[in-house]
Image 1 (cartoon, rainbow, N blue to C red):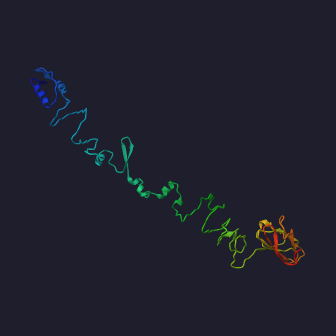
Image 2: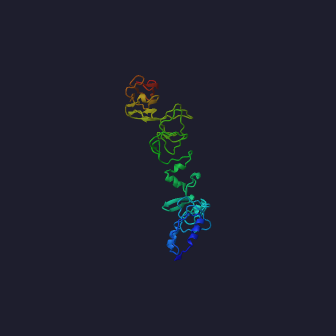
Image 3: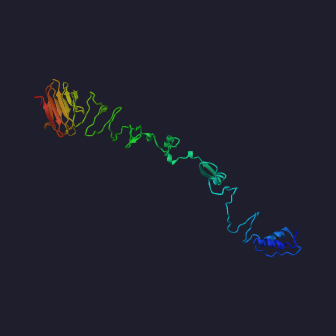
Length: 325
């Protein structure tokens, strides 16, 4: 207990010196004040409105109801930065921000860091990809992605919708065409084509077996061998016929020409090689004519006819005298 006698005016004088306006305390001389009564009386004067305090002041709890200005920065040691300025050090002092790399928020109040070495850098232009082949596979790129434009190898797939290596023809333009086996050509440019190997219609180029060839100019470096065959019975012209030797010893033989319209400029040489009296008849196809007639006859041994189609009729170019009947 505190006995307060005549010292209250001294206390009031102290607060007056501090510039604190005071209300009059309601005490009586000789009144004994409890701590609660004394604190209640001080509550009339604190907080202050104006005035200046000098010297150290210890306040257990401080409540600011308006603006609080500090002459210097106030460091915050716990849960803050312990730094007077906002700097890299300030962030480093926050728990959980001590890693290196890119920060990633993984949940409420939880963070992790990703090393820059595991992330693609734009300035590296994909040179930092760990496995280029795996990356191509993931992008759906095949082996052709690594082939040079001047050296592309196709081992499958299609070109213009046609399977590579299949038997279905497709258009292609090549500077040089090399065939490892049989090559089938459809139409060659009229300006000419050079074939140094392979085959035409299954016949080797330069071989001894004749094959049908259409060209603007035919130049031979040696003798030209024309095909011939011998027949002993009636038959029609074959696609490879040129010289036809007819043996009619067993009976009369009729040799039928192809249609003149489908044989423009084609030449036939037909000869009777036997000595029998059996005649050889050279017959037309359809309504064609042979020198205006429907047929021609060879009746003597070694008698022969040379004929050529002009696209409409057959014309006799030469014959052995006295063999026409």
